[in-house]
Structures are given as C-alpha cells and as structure tokens.
Amino acid sequence: MSDKQLSGMKIAALSVDGVEQVELLKPKKALEEAGAEVVVISEKPGEIQGFKHHDKADKIPVDLTFDKANPEEFDAVLLPGGALNADAIRIIPQAQEFVRKTDQAGKPIAVICHGPWLLVSSKLVKGRIITSWPTVQDDIRNAGGNWEDREVLRDRNWVSSRKPDDIPVFNREMIRLFAEGREKERKVA
Image (cartoon, rainbow, N blue to C red):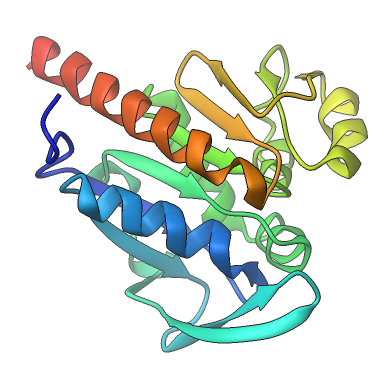
C-alpha cells in the first residue's frame, strides 16, 4: 500500500473537552500522513481542552460542530478516549446519531480507551467484540457486547484499543481498516 493510501478520505474525529490529547492527536497525525483529511467535530465551536490523564494539556481547534456535521459526508469515524470526554460525549444526541448512521452505513469506526462509552450509549455494542480501558468493560458487557483485554481488536467495521500505549498498533490497524472500507466503497460504486 502507498504512503497516501487514505488520500481523499474524510475522517470525523468526535471529541469534546477532556479528550485524552494523545489519543486524538497521534491517530489524527497518522491519518493525515496516510493522506486523509481529519475533521475535529465537537459540541461547540472554537477549541476543546485536551488532557494528559487528569492534567490539562493543550487546546485543540474544533473544525465543525455536531449541529452542522453530516455523517454521510465522512468516510470513517475516530473516537478518542479520555474519561471526561467520553462521559460527556456519550449523552450528546447528535454524537449518538452520528455514530449510529456511520455504523448503519457499514463505515469504519476506530475507538480507543473510554471512547466505547459513546457506542454503548448509542446502543451499538450488542453482539460486538471490543476492547477498551478496563473500567469500561462492565458497561460493554451490560450492553450486550463482548469485551476482551487485547492491545487491538477488529470486529467487522470496528477497530478498538485500550490505552495510549496501544496507539502504534491502533494506528496501524485503523489505517488498514479505513483503507479496506475505502476499497469496499469503490467496489460498490
């Protein structure tokens, strides 16, 4: 595969204040280096507050707000973690609808750490196999999902990882999944 294997793809990165900065910015950089356009979508315009665990980190620019974002215009979704981010975004109806429409269309979703909380609240995990930060496993199981403690896990159109230490393998598998999603779309078109 070429270095720009995701050229022309548009990826939605759904995040709010409290996002684990490294889980947004490192995958974003990897996707951009692979040729994708990554759009940070949030609840309010301006910037969101990144965190490094429990400490404030940098402000991250927001490109688009949920009320103006159309999931049909995106090829895939990135859901970074951070407990504060994931706990807040999971109750935003537009974020739930965004991931539901993305999943219904069979488009790829990459999720890490606490990020699966949005998928749980969107009622998407029943029957799915996923990994996450360990404290999220009960929520996943209670929602009918199957949780496994693995560095990275693929289940159909989803790829998931547990924590920042998993980012290198998460990025590799995310790019592979997104490229496969693109190939499927080309064959359908």
